[in-house]
Amino acid sequence: MGKDKLRRFAENETFGLLYQPEFEEVFNKDYLMKGLWHKNVFKNDNPIVLELGCGRGEYTVDMAREFPEKNFIGIDIKGARLWRGAKSAVEEQMHNVAFVRTRIEFIESLFGPGEISEIWITFADPQIKRDNKRLTNSRFIERYNSFLIDGGIIHLKTDSRFLHEYTVAMATYNGYKILEEIKDIYGSGRADRLLSIKTHYEKQYLAQGIPITYLSFIPDKEKKPGEPEWDPGIYIVTPR
Image: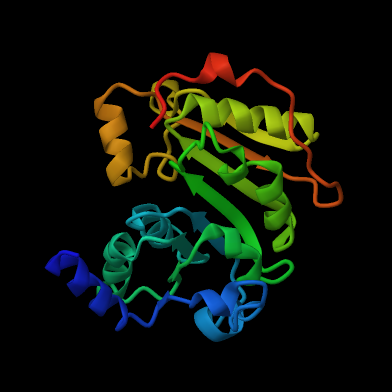
């Protein structure tokens, strides 16, 4: 392991806004902060927005700057990446940002019923060959429903046509309310302040001429989600 990565890991330990639960704290049990993020972390009742697979935390931090009336939590398993977002939030003395280093598979252990208002999934691995790992599949939607408020919104921003079309099919199949679907954010004229936040990887995709898509929808919490029947082959361009 490189010295720079070791330095980042050590500095992560000093960031009060970065939570790093051990495996035993979240595997088949509730994490100590579950249901207490408003009270113990943000000290307010403002809505909490999650970013899943937040990487370097650019989107989490930028959203927190833009919307001080909301709280934001970025989740990723890569500590060296989270360091960048956490350090920026600490240096700017931001009080509406937190990060959690853990696997998204454990997300039900982190948050209680109605604790989260929105979820952002930004540039996640489309998991073309491993549908059980896909962050918008029915199993993950069921997990999200366990802690989303009624009417809670899920946002998907991606460079993957495969993931976008799969998620549209999944939402349509389950009768979810689709709020907005954009096939090309920057070519549509719809790139407002929120949608035009660019992560490190997004800039790389745009430089390659890859269109960035967006989808937002409200899942039905009263209905167990199912998997759509669709043909993924026509949407596979180049697997990551």
